Amino acid sequence: MIMKKFLIFIGGFVAGIIATILVAFLFLTEPDDGLSGLMIFPEKGECIASININEIVVFQVLEPNMALASAVDTRNFDRITVLLVNHEGKTYFDQQRIEIPANKCARKIGTYRYTAEDGRVRTVPVVVIEYR
Image 1 (cartoon, one colour):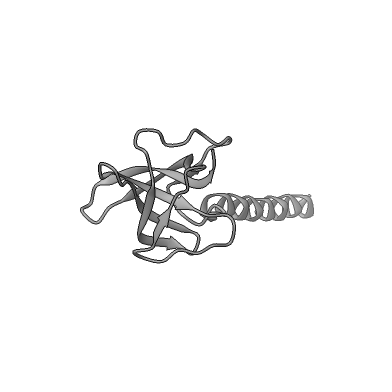
Image 2 (tube, one colour):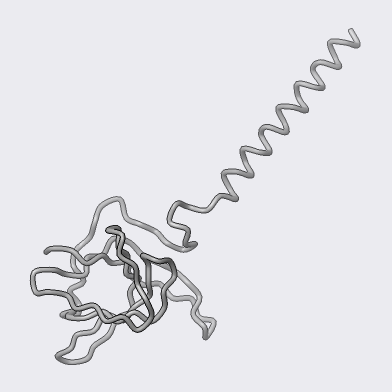
């Protein structure tokens, strides 16, 4: 009888340790992208149409293939901040200027939420440059 209770206790103890490890793994692991606040949509969205984007200027590289940038309409100098993502192995650097050809666009694939230097929370579109 004592041995049976002891085995039940040990079984419960081991099950508790395993459950704790699994829960910790689920809550403490980073997503594959490595950026907290990044949400990628299940399907790609439309090209950003609020302005006619001809050029993107990188102002902060977050990962080698991810950078915060200003998308610029060079005709009237409207700007929108975006998180530029590249899945083709290209890397970015600060102050890099990227021209967007007429047959390509900045396509929205998600959103990125971060805290800016001024302490305000910002949400910006995540874009990739691809054919229209």
